[in-house]
Image 1: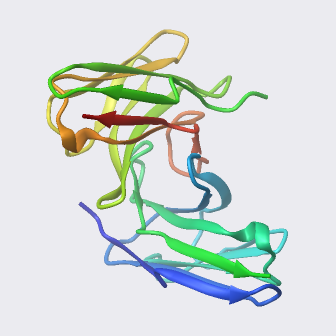
Image 2 (image 1 turned 180 degrees about the horizontal axis):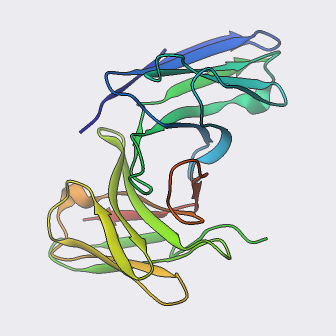
Length: 112
Length: 114
C-alpha cells in the first residue's frame, strides 16, 4: 500500500514554542487531512486540505497542501499543554471513497 | 449533532472466537469505513460501505467482514480471532465518501484477544 512518511516521530518542546511537522509521499494525493489523537480515543479532525498550495488555519494550527501534491505540513504556534497528543496526516489518492492512507504519527509532548 | 458512535468500547475475547462491532455514523452521513490501529502497523484501512454496498476493501483476510444497513449503521465482524487481531478498531463516516470530504472518527472499540 501507499506509504506516508511523517516526521518527526516525536517532539519534546517547551510551552510557548512553535511546532512543525510534515508528511511526504511518493504518490499524488487529492486530499490531505490532519488529525490529533489522545490516548484511548479516536482521531479528531483538525484541518482538511483539498487543493495544491492551499493554506488553512484552525486557531493556532495552520496546515498546507504541498504544491507537488505529494506532501503536507502542519504548524502549531505558541504551544500549550493541551496540545499534547499524537498528530496524524492522512492522504486520499483520488475518488476512492474513504480509503485514506495514514502517516505513522508525530507524538508531541509540551513541557510547561 | 451527535458524532460517530461505536459500541462496545472494550472487548475481551479468546482465540478462535468471533466478534461483532457496531458503528452509527453522523446523521446524514452515508459512507462508513473501518480502520484498524495497532502500535506496529498504525492506522490501516479495512473497508468502506456506501448504500449498503462494500465499495472499497483493504488488504485484510476474509475473516474480516462487514455490512451496512439501510439507516447507514454498520457492523464489522471478525471470525476465528487471532492474537494479532488485538487492536483499536475505528469507524469513520463522511457524507458520501467522495473526494473533497471530511472524515470523522468514532472513539473506537479496543479489542483484546487472549
